[in-house]
Image (cartoon, rainbow, N blue to C red):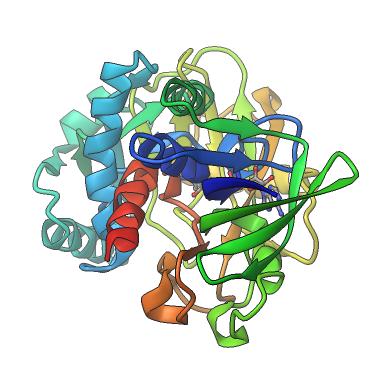
Length: 365
Ligand SMILES: Cc1cc2nc3c(=O)[nH]c(=O)nc-3n(C[C@H](O)[C@H](O)[C@H](O)COP(=O)(O)OP(=O)(O)OC[C@H]3O[C@@H](n4cnc5c(N)ncnc54)[C@H](O)[C@@H]3O)c2cc1C
């Protein structure tokens, strides 16, 4: 049987960040069931480098987002990955929203983000012409990144270190052994077995299914999985915005906000919609809701120029409450050499390099 030190299930941005980092010190194989890396959530998101404003202090999301943001800007500079610190305007419209804005400012400080600045009405009018807001904060460290180029740079780092990415290869099951695992893979319809010392499940939306096929892993270490779709509409033609524009966050998402891509095109989304099965189709009814939500803060929106774009799916762990990332090693579930990552929704892209650093430290314990 072939042997490799570390097998990583999933070539999304998280699996690839882990692969790029761990391959500097050990042989690594990353597998993905798809024909290419990053075909699921990592290529179906807003591509925003989040500042780390909203998450509960000391949560993994808060810590890994703030650390990940710094690592990501550094990485993009070093490996020439397109990224821009566009900054973000977070705005309130009502008195109740102004209280929320103040709470977010306080939360950001607790998370170590000290660069938020309040904007006057004149500044709002100059920086976001036509935006209807009674108060706003500017976050200068929020930015955007080209997620495809980021993943490509991670694949290059992995391969440069001698590691491998193999696509069209599905993780089937794993059996713990004295020194690690015997792993069964499905390579384009053919079963293939190999052994490894360390197995990392970075399967995103499929992480729970994968975990159920790791023998000996207790069911109470496999959280529930709920799919929450987020749809985007792009805005064709010119627009007045140079910064990202965010309303107050909602229960399961950040509200229908405006982001820009590397070429400066404006897009709106994502909304939130729990679904029963993996389905990236856009919901035709969504446009009216998008128009109403956007016009409530940008009345000048021309609905004719708003066109369906794409959808991504958040791997939620709960239907009715906020959640943190769940990253479990042997100290949690008792199986040496196994790391499971669950619920890696936003800000997982921003946090990806910090998640890799965190997992490497867990493996050393
Ligand atoms: C709508 C939306 C907007 C978002 N916006 C942002 C944002 O602006 N900024 C931000 O920081 N984060 C954002 N996120 C979060 C971010 O996109 C994710 O946290 C991140 O992409 C997760 O990466 P991943 O590698 O864990 O998952 P994925 O990209 O889904 O990768 C998992 C991979 O594992 C593979 N896989 C699974 N099981 C198997 C198996 N058995 N065998 C082989 N391969 C397998 C899959 O094929 C897949 O390629 C957003 C998410 C969504 C849904």
